Image 1: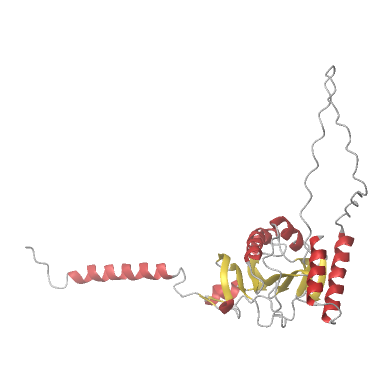
Image 2: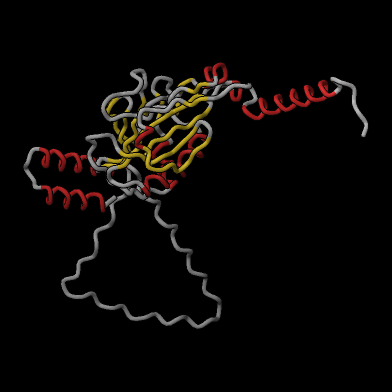
Length: 293
């Protein structure tokens, strides 16, 4: 067997070790450092995650301690939800709160989560996007919130609105906590949102009535009669039963209609809170109002 001179193995071994170490460092992180995501204050209440990406999530979590039960599960179509969220505005910038890409990400996952959540649960989210006139040159920002449905409508409590995070994350590898909104107090005192299609509960909290699904398209008109064809027999009209009353025409679902229903719900709640109607009467009357929506 051929013998190698003493020490001839060392260059080969060192080169192999250096190559191996370089490959391990590259696999760990492109920047060679660990990346950390700071947990938010409600992370320990998460029940399930409906959608998750690197810097985005939609999740179901236990409601905050002391919160009143919500009207969940809440079946709201993506079209209804988009119509409810699109008009919302970031009042500090006088611009839409969500851009189109954010709505495309957020709406389907929110609809799915609301349809799954239970009365003692909320839906929390974080969504990222670019806002401003410079397109891809603008750093991404994050908007977070807490969503749940009550008799007054769909509640949205924002936590962070267009908050900067990318610069710090790229510089340090540490991402700030994405805090959803809170019932008790605002996460960020500078946050102000508006709801042209609803009402403001607090600077960071709006209540929005969800419009009913659009009515089905009218039936196609009957085909024109063919010349020379025998007319079809027309059945004799059936006389109305004695005492029958024609149903009243349905009121159009316009802004005035929803404002009236909202006022009725508020009046019922005030009567119930003042002890003027029982729990059963309150539930029954509230159900009757909601059935009209």
